[in-house]
Length: 291
Image (cartoon, rainbow, N blue to C red; front, side):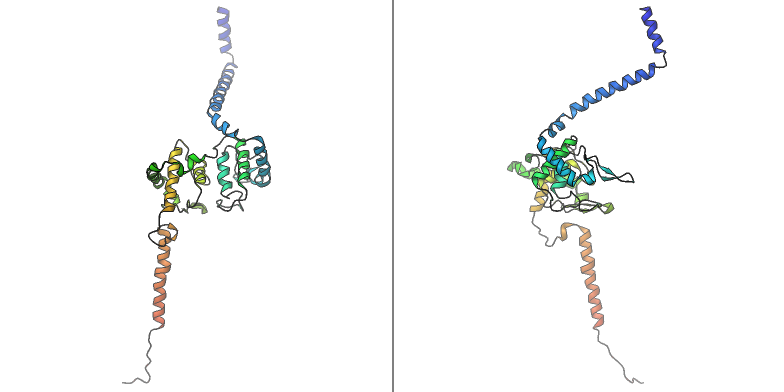
């Protein structure tokens, strides 16, 4: 025992003892982290495996032709000279991001700009699914939601009115600053804008909430539950169905469009009328007037 104790004491005094202990501690920390991370990411990995290899391979073929010039051959992104991304990395964005961006025609972009605009789709629904399958294989991320998660029609009829009220409360608190009180969209700094939500498919609204496209924040299930997301969609649909009792709504964009109309049509009309009156005023001439 004395010899063993003396040997341990000599080892602790060695100059290599501290680096070895530090290395062992780092290895143990990495091992624990990998175990915890793998256990937490199991559901996302299960979402990846829902696509068969043929679908993933077909999606990769489409990706190499239509997407790799901006996002890289393996979805790693293409950096620019100033350190920004010409096309961001797609690793971990999930199938839902692809279904939203490609399904709404925002991708592929016609030309670089401040924001990808909604336009007619380039790919068919089957091709969108194939692209989503390939991007999902790059890393775990949000999957395409099931219909029960986003369709307000799945809410029981006797609970639908209450769901609309709940969704309206959340929308007015968290969404009107960008999307307007009537979900008609609005301007944002840097040439960007919040798009209108009128006429958007419920699935794409749900996908936007969980993926945070462009400058929109991500509303994860920890922030707002799937049921609450469905309530918000139900409220947006109720706005679409509400009659326009006030007549011409001017896009429901609020005081900006109304003020512009007042200046151009109102004050502009008055100025034009004043000019017309001045040009048609009766004139008199005095010939040879004398006292």
